[in-house]
Image (cartoon, rainbow, N blue to C red; front, side, top):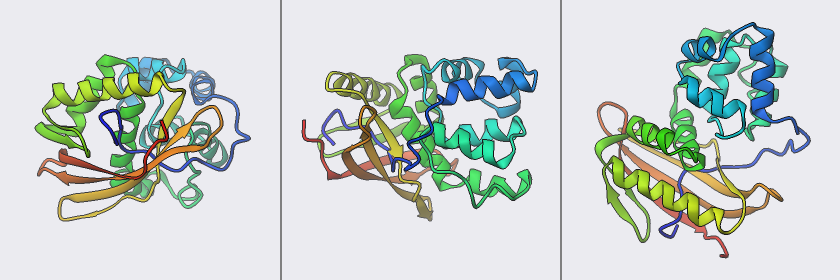
Length: 231
């Protein structure tokens, strides 16, 4: 991408008939389970503020976050998948008949890392961006695309803010992970798609390559563009 390109996006689900917002569904099921936002946030290991923003539509959850919330809300398989679809992800048909402890390896894998990375570039709250950058990258981690090479949490957070402004001036867009992440020997690669939230068309397609540190965080993120945006 250009200096504005964000990273980590993916394929849009073909189930466009799901219209109810993911935040509304989450709030419905949380209230059905008689849980406060704080109680659910603690169980799912997310911040109360982030959960509140998701419920009100101010933030987009990652696939991993949706799965954790679905698990701790004890949702039946159809509702689990409905939640994923509402968030713009494909359903977990291959997971829905497994027990919770059998789902954890898939949830903790490379695709969840890619989902968290993609969610960062869709995040608009500066505090949540800074927190997500610190969780994803090492202190001296790098973000590199064809025209940008920045290092450190502050510089990466500023790049995310720049990208948010750049795309907001040109329409309404969101990144989606292609859910195709693979990795070995402290490296990960995955595809992404930038889609228009107005018509669902792919504005840009690309991929990212991670070099991971020993603690599992990103030491270097390198971006490649297969289809650059027309604007």
